[in-house]
Length: 173
Ligand code: FES
Ligand code: FES
Image (cartoon, rainbow, N blue to C red):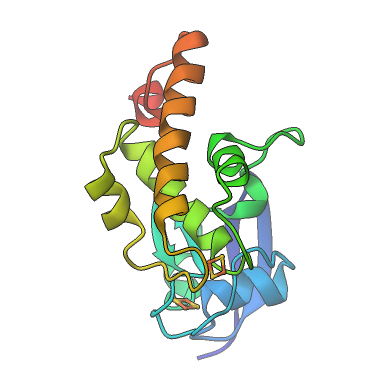
């Protein structure tokens, strides 16, 4: 099979690049588009460092052949902050000391974003499940778990103050 043009909407921008068959989404993001927040850890689906959102769902971008998602909407950590302002998850990670070496952090944050998009008030079990595929060698996970619960609270309060529905999905329903 020949290389093909891949068109994606990445962080609200239409992007195109040429990819050989079997090129992973992670390679497309990092090597073709220069978006290096998603990390290449194991490149075998075992660490979660490459987690990004595809059409709103958290995926391991190292395992996803990019030609299978041509036309999809992708969100990476680069697209989380708006107008230079950290969002609730990023702020809670920062304030809660939920990052040490930082290698796992982009994947952790994207897994948390996917969780909070579908569940604005997750319990600890749901948080643990949401990051169960994301490995952290530094923190012992407790600060990360606390930060995600705190981020959920911050987001609920911000959305309530703005008179917005609790879930993103409720806005488009
Ligand atoms: S780099 Fe994708 S799961 Fe480790
Ligand atoms: S902060 Fe180092 S791997 Fe998680």
